[in-house]
Length: 456
Ligand code: UD1
Ligand code: CA
Image (cartoon, rainbow, N blue to C red; front, side, top):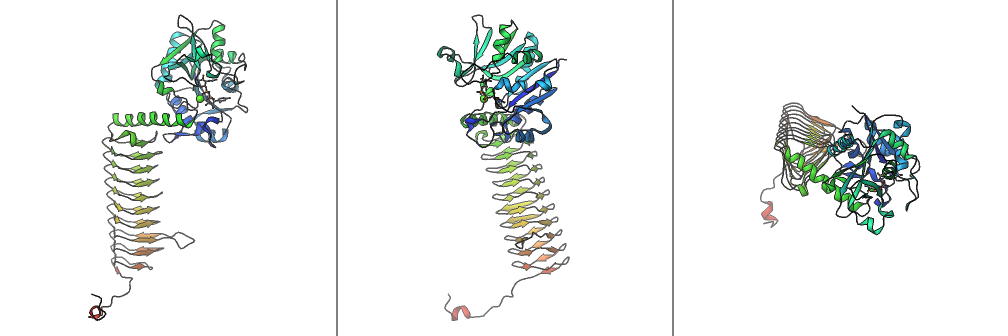
């Protein structure tokens, strides 16, 4: 087997994004574009990946971590110069080198594989991935001879009006014989409109040396979109969103309206789950089978069991069991753990709390820093008073407790197993097991007073 290496170009600033964030770190469906590129390369099983970093080098390295090796391009003198920075790491090796721009996150692993296979089959020294664009503005154009052989690439800014008519574009992805690549790079000049060392000039250089050049034309232009500004970013987002939705639908997830459903690239969703419109699933979220999510739910970095409903609610960094219902209009904040068959009703906020099996908080409550046992019923309007202005304190509610409506549980406090808190209580002392706690002013009835005061 021939060794396969990959170089990802990610050193540019991305001036056209007009952003404080470096271009390749802008997210597409929640994941930085360069990470999509590297993940797709990992999908083809490359033997080594070298990412060329420059602008925002530290942040790019932090984002990709151990998925890649790195080479620094201290000054951005062009894409050929960028690739040259990998020479120390790759220059001496025998094999095939795939070069991909860090701003083309939609190129699939399968297309990379097909490109490499084409390159190997044709025994070319260089193979360029091309596509036909309806609007080729901004892309390099592929110049072929009368017989259809690729001669060279010409950048948009350097192209003659006639060359600009060409709709076959350079996608910025290539496959090279590794040795031939590094030899040719030394011959690239920067005599062009941008004063840069252009990587695609390698094609013309190798061609002039009679090397065999090949092109692999992909029929899906949308896959090759290069993101240079935020208008194209939104187009890429749309393509990726549709692609992710399709994958889930083919795996048995119902998505009522894919156009209004946002699913991160790394989310996992079980069979027969239903995603209703306006739903956003972010980060490393896992959703179990037969869940109903939405309409209008927002779930980030959370794990949800099977048969659970999350209706018009927000869930972040939390674990939610099976057969549980949340919402409508609930907010599950980070570090919460709801077990199976829990019910969280409307206008309930849960923060950094645990609720045991079968427990219910059905309406208008705040449960923060609480340890709640199993089969607890928390009445409407209950507040765990967890904050004294300086510190947060824990409320412990043991199994089978019943908390009456409109109670304040002033933490730190513990309600023992099977205890009962009368409605309207403010509980400041621990309640022993199986006890009834009443913490409210006694009611007094003044008979006949209403009539006397003419109140009715
Ligand atoms: C490039 C190609 C063009 C192709 C298009 C496809 C060149 C000269 N042109 O143009 O033929 O149609 O991609 O999307 O290669 N980068 C570096 N160091 C540098 C310059 C760029 O690492 O010195 C990186 C950028 O971070 C970016 C990638 O290379 O991820 C491409 O650079 P960009 O400036 O976007 O090239 P395009 O003008 O789009
Ligand atoms: Ca680009």
